[in-house]
Each structure stands twice: as C-alpha cells, then as structure tokens.
Figure (cartoon, one colour):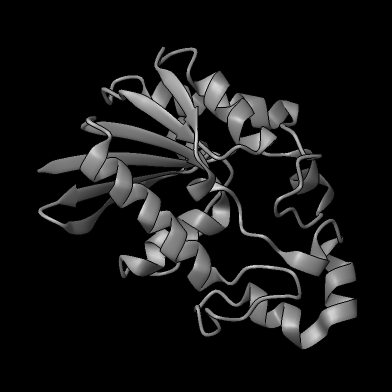
Length: 201
C-alpha cells in the first residue's frame, strides 16, 4: 500500500511580514505575497493527481488551501492534527521581544538541530508533541481515508518536524514550500522539498 502526501506551508502571513511569532493565533492572514505563493502551490500541485486537501483550521493555512484549490478542484477538509504548534506565552511577540524577555529559552525554541524537542513555553506545546500528533494524523489518513494522493495545508514547524523524523538534514522551509512524503508498507519516506521561490525563479 503506497500513499503520497504533499504537505505545504501556508503563504506569507501578516505576522510573518511583521516578524511576529504566530502559533495558534487566527488574527494572521495572507499578505498579497502570500496569496501569490499560494497560487504557485496550486500550479505545482496541478499535475500531481491530488484527491483531497486536509487543512489546518487556522485562517492562513485555509486561505492557502482555498487559493491553491482553484487549480485542483478537490474537497478541503479541516483537521486539527495539522494545526500550528501552540507557542504559549510567546504568542504574538515580535522576535526581538521574545529574545529580550526569554533569552536562553527562546534560543532553545529556535534551535534548528532539534536538541530540545521536549522544551515548551508555559501554556504551550513541545515540538515532540507536534511530531507525534502530525504523524498520528498522517497515518490515520493513509490507513483509513481511501485516497492515494493527498495534500495537507499546514505550517513551518510541522514541515520541519516531519523532515527531522525522516532523517533529512535541516533545510530552510520558506512560505509555500511543499514537502512530498511517501508512506509504503508502514514506512515513511522522504520524496522532495520544493520551494515555490526556487521553482518559479
């Protein structure tokens, strides 16, 4: 049984543009640049035989899914497994504010070598918890959904945790990046990571 997933990060959001930390906030939506990135996601996925899009319920991910879907014309279904990490008390802070207020803890959170997977801020979620729920969601879809090729509209930390779990060296995950993952005989495999910026330059 071989299943394919195309997991894409939302386009640039208003919080991205302002340098603010966004976790579960729904106050952040796509910028004009983000909308163009979402259109590029749709163009890249147009020939991949996508059968359904599962989407984080947050506005920025849903907007990206809806714009990309103009070329895919498939069902979009919200799924909490794919929501962004809960960042707790640093939600909404500018990166410089988080650095000034939380210093070493914020450096641990931003560590790109995954040295602190179980660290989280008060009221928040750890990256290991994100990884667990994301793979629970993906496996659930692979085993039970009845589709062979699925897309997932999600967030940067989710894509990063999937890459780490698959043993892929750290890579920059731009807005609109698309991660191709294959599930075959109960095993997960890395396919590719596509940047919409690189793809269309």
